[in-house]
Image 1 (tube, one colour):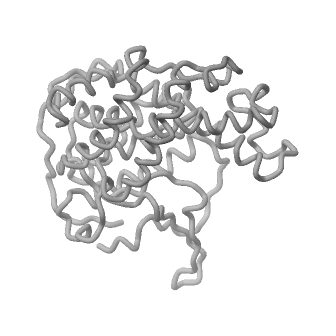
Image 2 (cartoon, helix red, strand yellow):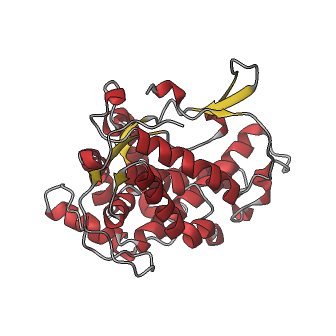
Length: 325
């Protein structure tokens, strides 16, 4: 199966308002099916596709440099050490991470690399769906169709980290409410394509995978908010600020920064929430004790509150058949 198909969707009837629920209903089946159809490092169609830890080295270095200048301020809900508009800072990091920022910044690339070294969890992924990834074309029948392809992020990656990156762009309250359903739906879709991943193993990779945006977003927030503070805007910024809708009178550059601040508030808040829900610090410490290697807990209970015991079966791919719709 060619990677060129990516995520093409034929035009046709049907309409509906765009909402978080609607976007997720479209996006989840697409990305989960893409993962499951192109699962496994040795899949023949992935021979020339680079691994996530190969494609993101420069990005990680940039994130580390930014984080060393500001992550410690973000965790303490200050703007370069000063208390400014705490109401906008909706994140609540695990208390055990405060004071260990430098240690985590240093470990971030190695954590993400170790996730990529688990070949049983690797799949081709598209990553986040945004409008700049959309393209349109006429099919042989002359009907308008569209697809989505993320040229920067498309690579082979650990599916736990892939979904951590995808989900933390959602409104934090929405993700907190629906996360157990999302994870269940992702794993169910994998099962339908013959790929079985124990929930506990997925969640462990998922929570460790938050480290990239935690470091990247936590450092970046200081730059964004400092710029808006100099413009006299940050002091009045609120979560889900209605001015992000574009009816603000801001010029394009300022609006981009306001939207960026709101987006990064969401991603960093979600990272902190996921880290607390699924005990990031414990998994990180176990990773360090194992010399930078993953220590899977397939028999561990889930931490989503569902009360369901995690499947103890090792990750297996039940079918090598290639499936397309």
